[in-house]
Image 1 (tube, rainbow over the protein chains, first blue to last red):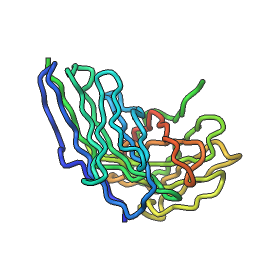
Image 2: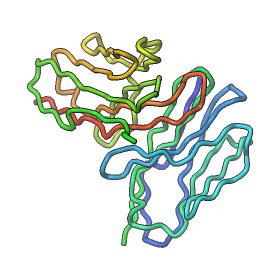
Image 3: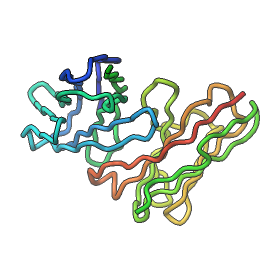
Length: 113
Length: 116
């Protein structure tokens, strides 16, 4: 069975702090992809990143970085120097070959000025 | 290029009435998904279309819910005899070629359904 866990329901930080959002997944497949989506208060989910199971290199995009560790089945997302505009609900998702997406429950991030 | 569009953006209805929610996917996207998101909750999968067929309807909560897709494009989600617990945001997403690929989904803005 496939499952995605985001243990942090809500996180609050003060602007300019770094914050890490955790994502732990379960799958028996060796080939799979992991995704992160952002849902700002406006409501529309925005795709952030896709990572395949054979590529464990960390990825950095501006203030965003992702740490993929197969050994711990984790795909964590870090925002450096957070800003108020980062306030949103963030979803981690898993996709196995031939199957639908499985989304985690989401983490609500509030960045306070 | 146009993204995924959904209509109406808001729908208020009375308990017991039928409603139809529409989704226009990105042109060329063969896969289309419907999700439901209750207030402050995660995404609940409802149904998946590949072309006009629905190989996975496992998420439809009851036989009051149905969906169709025509011309490999527009999809309509119909809820009959609405109940207050149907109140939620209904999200539509499309992607290029699942399930045998790993393309990301693109989401529409959602339809907020309120059943009084």
